[in-house]
Amino acid sequence: MNLDFSVIPAYLDVVLLGAVWTIAITVAAALLSFVGGIILAVIALYAPLVVRLPFRLFAWLFMGTPLLLQLFLIYFGLVQIGIDLPAFVAGVVGLGLHFAVYNSELIQTSILAVDRGQMEAARTLGLSRGQALRKVVVPQAVRDVIPPIGNNMIALLKDSALVSVIGVSELTLSAQLAIGRTYRPFEFYLLAAVVYYVINLGMEAVQRRIERRIAAAR
Amino acid sequence: MTEPKPFVNIRNAQKSYGTLEVLKDISLQVARGEIVAIIGPSGSGKSTLLRAINDLDPLTGGEVWLEDTQINKKLPHRQYEKHINQVRQDIGMVFQHFNLFPHLSVRENVTLAPKLLKGLSDDAAEALAREQLDKVGLLDRIDYYPSRLSGGQKQRVAIARALAMKPKVMLFDEATSALDPELVEEVNLVMKKLAEEHMTMIIVTHEMGFAETVCDRVIFMDKGVVVEEGPPSKIFRNPDNERTQNFLRKHLANANR
Ligand SMILES: Nc1ncnc2c1ncn2[C@@H]1O[C@H](COP(=O)(O)OP(=O)(O)OP(=O)(O)O)[C@@H](O)[C@H]1O
Ligand SMILES: [Mg+2]
Image: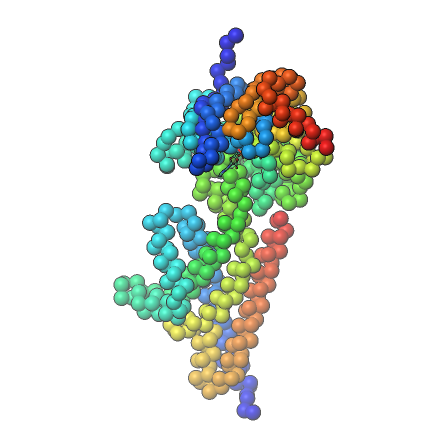
């Protein structure tokens, strides 16, 4: 065996900086995918057909094609039509929209599962349909969908490694950088894996806290 | 004798689901402060009629008026939505299954609509919530979530929530039917209190005893028509119509079983 972990300390700062970028991208994309998922779900369920159809196409595009291709399209493709996004932003947008579509599917199911009486009670008080959705139906739907969305967000963390291909020096790319200098792939990929795992644990802890807070309010 | 001008006025209400005629030309006038019970067998159209009043189940024919406003008037969609949201603020409704908002505390259940629709300040909303919850005897539950309340308490909160909009009329659709028998009385007491305050109420109910003591007038519906109406003493003790007699006899037999 030819393993030498003593090379790690010299590049630890590089890898940890990569980890910071990974966390930043994951958190930003997760927020986008959450808010975007709610908006997409409401559009899919309640918007008139002319609005719904293009969004349907959009959803199909994001679910039916590889995320890698979507990132390329957003980062390299959009430049041609004058939209030049920094790599980090392109990565967040790509990941965020991709997972927004998945979240939207969950949220739609959850909205439809909210008892019809909730909408009725809100409407009889004089709330408009939009107000009733915003204040009564969607909050309940979102509350019920937090656990499965949490799983999507773990997938998002793992897929964030893909943004290395458009040059965001997140965790995977940082590890590669260190490997390029030291020719020690096993050590640094292992290190990156450990760091991913730790971030993962952190996300699960956050999710548990959110679920506990929701449970307390029942 | 001069009739007082009707407060709620249902004129020639018709409702069909496809070929099923649920309401067949029903007219009903309710005066301000009057308390009307609607009774009748299951499927006779009681809920449909009640829900037509705030246009939750829109009629396929006929008119519903509250004072000088036609509730179900024909308007372009946008304008209609605005109109109906305004009208519904004046019509409180209480459902069989309470329909409290489970993600909101009792306080928030009561203040949601007034804050959103009347722009009440936090202080004013708090005072309103306390006033309404005190009225239904649940001030001490103001911080609870609905899941921690009994059925009777939930329904009292639902009543407080409706009252918080200061409605002109209250509609009750079998408000006590889903409750355990020992919890019925606390809800009935709240409704009696409203009656003493001369709230205009239209009450769909299977509780003949309650209807008899609280209501000014009883409407007996069957198969989408009003078969007979009159003061409770008349309808319950001495009904003219055979269908009314049959219904009450069956109902009594069931209740005593
Ligand atoms: N959305 C609907 N689609 C089709 N038929 C309906 C619908 N809603 C109600 N009905 C029918 O209309 C009739 C009247 O129903 P409604 O709920 O008004 O009766 P009800 O008098 O309130 O009965 P109950 O005492 O059981 O509550 C019933 O035959 C019912 O099946
Ligand atoms: Mg009914």
